[in-house]
Every structure is written in structure tokens, then in C-alpha cells.
Amino acid sequence: MSLFQVFSRSRVPERVRAATSPEQLRLVRRRTRPTAMFIVRLVITAVAAYVIALGLQSNPAPLLAPLTALLVVQASLYQTIKHAGQRVISVIAGVMVAVLLVATLGFTWWSLAVTIGAALVVGYALRLGGHILEVPISAMLVLQLGTETAATDRILETIIGAGVGLLAGLIASPVRVQPAEEAIAELGRSMGSLLDGIADGLSTEPDKRTVESWLERSRRLGKKIQRVDDELGAAEDSVRLNPRARGLVSPGLVLRGRLEALEHATVTIRGLARSLVDRTALVMADSAGLGAEMWEADVRDRLAAVLHELAAAARFYGSADSADDPGRVRANVDRHLSEGRRYRDELGRLLREDPGHWPLHGELLVHLDRLLDGLRAEHRTEGPQRRHPESRRPAVHRVRAPRRLSVPRRPAGVTRRTEITDRRALPAEAALRSSSFRNPARSGVT
Image 1 (cartoon, rainbow, N blue to C red):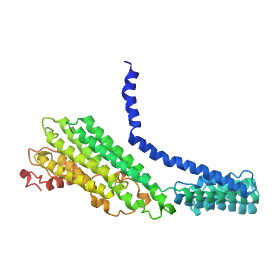
Image 2 (cartoon, one colour; image 1 turned 135 degrees about the vertical axis):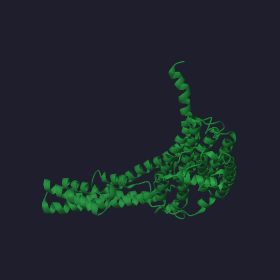
Image 3 (tube, rainbow, N blue to C red; image 1 turned 120 degrees about the horizontal axis):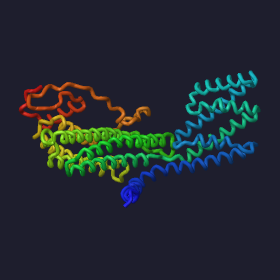
Image 4 (cartoon, rainbow, N blue to C red; image 1 turned 120 degrees about the vertical axis):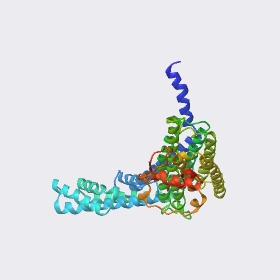
């Protein structure tokens, strides 16, 4: 069998199945549907602006009107109104600068430089954003044509295009709350899939490649957070000033808090995967000594049970807003978290029998506690504060680097590193103490 046949039989079908999975098809449909509808809106709006401009003025080809309509129409009504105003102001400002300066200075190379400079100053003074360059462009076009009729036509066509774009925004601007809800639900499913994958992998003692693949998958969750945040930002813009969203609660009041909880959960999952890598590294380094009891069957079973319950809770948590019965979904979240808490306590009692590895055991328990507490119903029902647009960066980028702290020296016979990060040492010690994890032989150590 040739190398090409082996590749085609192993790789290609797997990639085809992944590309045609229901989840992937649902993702493609959700991403392409708004784009297709937006293209249709742009075409209809541009043609309508051209036809109206053709009937209102003598210009045989009023292409500035459809051009303005294309530049004005945005995905949301709020952005459409904003761009329409900036476009009209920039064109009027450019025409006025050109008419005033040419009437005073005439048209020469140095008057052109003065006109461009003055137009840019006016654009920045008016805070026209992305339409600043439209001011000198309009001024130069008027200088080229050199007639008052050209200046009037340019202003009229711009107003027609902006007006048609605004009308199209009022009529057809969609409310994009559902795509944001679906994106959050998909993020919850991705988190649940990762946690279930880790739990299934604990049926046997994991090797280095397996735990590193878990860590890599947990890192990829951060990229999905950014995409969901973009969807939520689009949903917030879509309801601003939109008459079709009358009576709807702002998605920032409901979905933003859920996304923040999932952001923090992704950071915790990444820390959990990192702790599993550390445990496996200890086993690989000293399987007959310090790592002998790191992955016992009872420990793996209890940990897998906790992760399965967390996976189910994450799926329900993400889909609470898009579900037909949110109350039932919240009840399912609470039920799975209660079961997960029970399994976590059983895991803590098992790990208590091995106090020599308290940093690794405590780190594992702390990550589990954070996941269980972060998905609690109380956190979800509180009204989250609306964040400033500049703070829409995912939480994974806001984690501070840990400080290095010294840990008191251990008694003789217990071997462990004497410096660990406060992110791992302090929460780990607290978790172990809360689980009655203190070793009686170490009761005199402060």
C-alpha cells in the first residue's frame, strides 16, 4: 500500500467527518447567514440610492449616492446612524473648505497643500473617526471639477445615499441576540467536551502525550472566548436605537455575566490541565518513588466523576438563555454541581491519605473548587454590570503573573521544592486544610 493510500484512508475521512459534523455545520450556518443577509441589504440599498438620485438630479450617472449608501450601511442601526452622520458632515466640510479657500487663494500647488491641510484639521476637530480622509477627498474633487454645480451635486448625492442607508437600517437592521446566545451555548458545549474528554482519558493512567493534548485543547478555548465576545458585542450594538428591539432586555445585562463566568472557567480549566501535566511528569520522573501513588485507580475514578458532572453543568450553563425552560436548565446545573461537589469531597478524602504531595493535591482541589463555585446558580442570577467597550478583552489576557513566595522548610524526610508560586501554594494549602488534609506529624509547622 502506497503512502498516498495510507494518508487518504486515515486522514481524509477523519477531516471530512470533522468538517461535516452537526456542530461544525451549525457553526458555519450561524456565521454565514448574517453575512449573506448583509450582502443582500447592501445591494438593494445601493441600487435604491442610485435610482432615487437619478430621478432627483440631472447627473446621468450619480454614482456617489450608491457609494455613500455602501459606506453608510452597517450591521447594526446604531453603527449605520453613526456612519451616516460622519459621512454627511465630512463631505459638507470638505466642500466648504474647497469653496472658501479657492475663492480666496485660487488654485495652485501651494493652495492645494493648504486646502488638504485645512481639510484634515477640520476632520480631526470634528472627530470624524474613519471618515476623516473624506474631508480632503471631497475638497480635491470639488477643486478638480471647479463648479458650484459639482459641489451641490456632491452634497445632494451624499445626502441621498446616507438617507437611503438610514432608511434601510430602520427597516432591515436585525436583532442579533440569538447568535450571541448560540455562541455562548457552543462555548459551554466545547468546555463540556473537553472536560468529558479528560474524564474519559482517566480510565487508564494518562501518559505525557495525553495530558499535553488536554493542555493544548484548554489553551484553544481562549480563542473561542474572543469570538464569543465579538458576537456579544454585535448583539449589544444591534439593540441600540433599534425599534425592532423594543421591549427586549439588553444582552449586556444577561449574557455578559454568563460570558465572564465562562471566561474564568476556561482559565481554571487550563490550570487544571496544567496540574494534570505536573502530576504525570512526577510519575514519569519517579514512578517507583514520589509518583507511585499519584494516579491510583480510586483517584482517577473520583476525579473523572467530578469532571463528568462539571461537563454536564457547563453545557447546561451555556444553554440557559437559549433554552425553552431556563428554570429547568438552572435546576439541572445545580443538580450536577451538587453531585460534582460530593465526588470532589470523596476525592479530597482519598488524597488526604497521601500528605507528602500536598502542593499537587491541593492545586488539583483548588481548580475543582473554582469550577464548582464559578458555575453556581447564585453567580448566574445576579445582574452583571455592563462593561466599558474597552474592557471587552477576555479574562485570559488579564491574569497577572504570580509572585514568588518562600514556603517554610519542611521537616526531614519530606522532599519537595521550597519555592512555589502564590497562585498554587496559598490556595492549595487552604483547600487541603478545608478538607482536613493537614498531616498530624506537621501540626507544629506554622
